[in-house]
Image 1: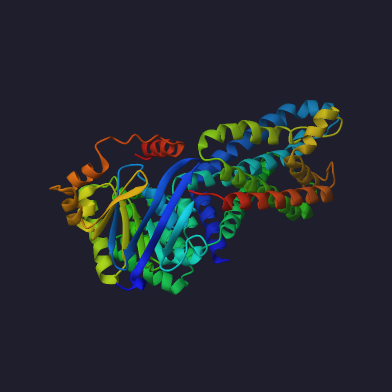
Image 2: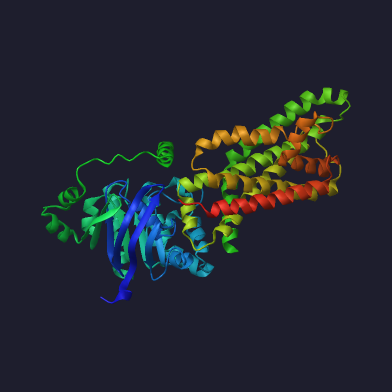
Length: 267
Length: 248
């Protein structure tokens, strides 16, 4: 494998917040066109790693290369290289589907004719074209996710990051969303990097899986090789053997509390 | 440039779409103008102060601009927690452009709100002294709006959640308003209290509107302009710096 085929390179990456080590000296690589899953229990360091890869957080130590660029020194180049779907909805509810797309297109400097063409293309793919002038606040969770996927692809990124993309969605919607993502990966050869704690999702979709826990990568390989290495019959068993049975008590941060309050609000 | 424009446009669209918010935000100034204006009117006139409604309206316009702009700035907290800010932060746009777009958007909304309150005041009997001074008055309204949107953004960049919100309301917004001379004349105040009113930036905003709307400025319009401009500059720079340090 030639070196330039690696689109994500992470070397000895560490993130500390006042004494607490969220990500502890991890290294991994992702090949161009690969579907790569970051699997781990709550609070394992998945989201923190993703934030560092996407220029939202500065690493405490270690190096990252995204499409050949450094997220600390070459932010704009890195930002143009990836699209992202965040764990929490990041749409503007008070704008229409089309306006949300257009906003994104302007921020990514797409000329207006190209913007119009691609927005129509993508909204048709995710089957939201006939709802383009509806305010996003009238959308269901699944529709919002589809819109976010369309939006993340608008600037034709080389890498698509998805942070728990199917959290809280019903099985039908989950299937549909993975179908979009997989066909995208095949047709456009986009590298897919996603985090999840759904084991069967990682097993079904990802070509390679990294299991992360307590900020460290504790195993890496195909679903098959993880099972063989742990002598487990299912990925779930392998996962539990690797990460233990203890339930993760995540301390509710003010942000989580607000999120909960908002969810209650919007139900 | 285009990024600044689209951020500005977003704020404006959100404002124009939330009719209940617009109407809700008009109730309070209207109540203040009617209750205080007509309630204190007779005693103000007997004390030789002239027409209280005329005196009060510039203060109430400042108040509604203060509320609208500060909250437009503080909205960054919501954007930050509920994701939308992330969408802008991972885009290839500098933080400085993001904050400029958002601040101009918030200030424009507050300007619109100020204009609506002004029109409302005409309905209940307010008469500007000189129509030709109106454009100047609106420039001052925009300057006040800019100052407090930037202040709101600066505060929002420092606090993580809405718990501090009540604190801001009680220890910042209310004192800014009540100590600004929006409701009372600045001459003849007890010395210490007089000093406190001079430390309140909104005092100069209220004074500038009194100068341009009813021709009765305490400090003079030039002083007001200089103070408001310098403060806006300082707060904008501080706010941009704090915003650029946000990590989500």
